[in-house]
Image 1: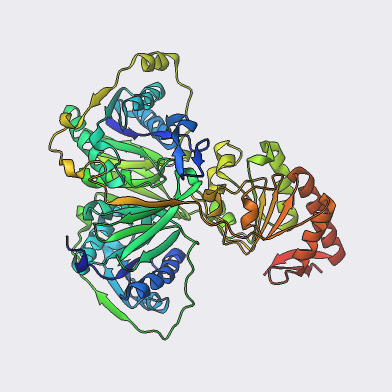
Image 2 (image 1 turned 180 degrees about the vertical axis):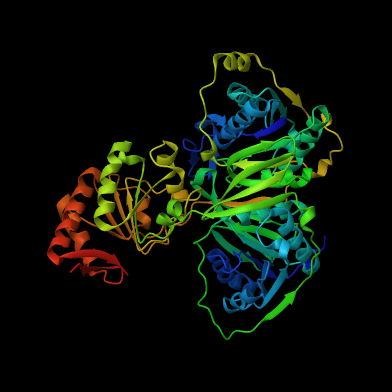
Length: 343
Length: 274
């Protein structure tokens, strides 16, 4: 393998037919920086059915080129059909870096492609950089349960690939007049050859959206003591119109269901206000919430690492502080005679 | 129906400590356990077997003491266990791991044809989720990741109906057999094992294979040599400066926080309900 045959930074553009996933736009922002450092074009690659109208959006978010494959068999994501498309593009155009969103489909696709391209893949990256001299992708992620960061390198294989956590990179402001090249490739796929069929897609927003889209989140940690004590977090949540989540420990202990876990292996959240209550702030948790606008930490231990990421810190017992907060917010509502709403 | 479940022995990451001076793991600080997601994978195989009948095999790669997680799987309800254990496997990343496991699966498949492979969604020490789909590619069978329900196994048609978790909801997938599933924890609850399973597990001696017991193995694809990724460095991220510590009594701190929040007009407002 001649490493110099490989040039360019590529982003997998995940879409659901009409809309591009947020993480793909974030990766165009992150990829733009890497491509500029390496002095190569940034490309988005797009697979699906009737997806050509999305190409312009990819360019407006920072891409110089869009590679697309449009085919009816690609309508819904399936590993077998999508990976054939990616293999075709990657083998023909030889990018040096390919990034995917660490979504269920992005991770699935990247794992399959890495195996067939016989190259390295770093999972759930939260920091990206390049070593310009060696043209090496430096993909860093929390490791070993999330108490330390590891930078993963792929020195002798190309392309270098990584999946990247949603909501940790920043998308660029779209520039709608921006121009770029759209390159379309043809693929031959037959529905009869497919071994899997997507029979139905069910959007179940009730379960998930409350954390992903909440303006205010109250996250409790193991320091709450027991599951009964979580009640005061629900009380505060109700008073101020927030959603309640938990750390990995809390979910492992069975105090909350898995879909309410915040952190590396749970949800990444970016609310306006994040209350971190009785949780220490392990790296694996912090990567899932550190981009919140305002972080308020409440913890008994003045040395808890969560105070390093908090905008405001209160050293104290949650069981004492939270009821006082509830009281204050209730008072505030009475004084102003209204509901709290978030901008 | 022959189901093979891939399992891994992992340090319990909830307990593991890191030496702050060397940034390395103190592996002795954590007990070794069956990866929790893999326990759910074994349990799901047991649930499927209750309906279809057949055999459940478990496969693991690791040092000789990893036989403990195979015994644990027998306790949950697996019938047979295989461990591939050899210095040549050491230092494998996900690519080299899926290669080694697929070679063992080739041999298992020769002994008894494999209809389904089940893996946990990921292992809690690596958190990658890449080995399962990698095995599927090497066996050339369809992978279905993030499975939350196996709704139906139809041995006449040789198909399986699966619910797969998505970012916002789930999808219903029909796959041909054989296929490979990776399962979420919510797929089932681990049931208490009957006493007979425990006795069987205590007596069980897994089959142990070295590289030389596997066929057509390219040694350059194993272990450290076969791993394209390396860990460049380990670091504790620079501690951010942190924000303002509020001072004083509990009431005082809460009061200060309320003053701050009231000023954050860009974040929230109080609207009159009238």
